[in-house]
Length: 194
Image 1 (cartoon, rainbow, N blue to C red):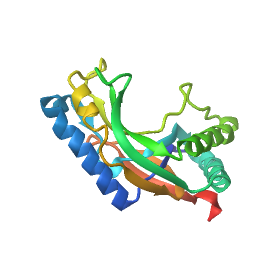
Image 2: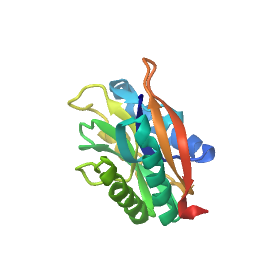
Image 3: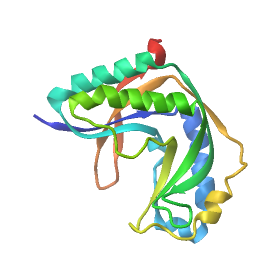
């Protein structure tokens, strides 16, 4: 039986995705030459990860799908706003560059926790780190992080936020290739069961 590389995420609709791509491009421009030290997430791959599952055997996919649908039905639509930028573990030498989220962050965190509770008995424990509301826009090419980006990230403070109405939770399969990952939506489950 084949394995599927799966993750669960909130996917921005096209209009929001275009505005997020513009924010990412603004960070890239502000970074100048330091932008070359980053592998930027392609615009079509921007998403808010709720839980990464990794390799899932074919026969487990229906159980995972049921857990995703149940967690979505128990939640409600979310009103998020994408605003600001930062880096993990810090902005001085980030390994991950991100756009921040405001608005219904606590309900989104509750949704992630509910997913974790539903998936743990299936053998997919939540990550040891606390869930963090952010959209990854790039990763440093060097494992030690990329210097020279603090100013570019700080320059996004005070910029106009992008409102994002979230109406569904999506189970994705990640197809890896030399060109980078391609994400395929397996299941889209309406929040609140609408």
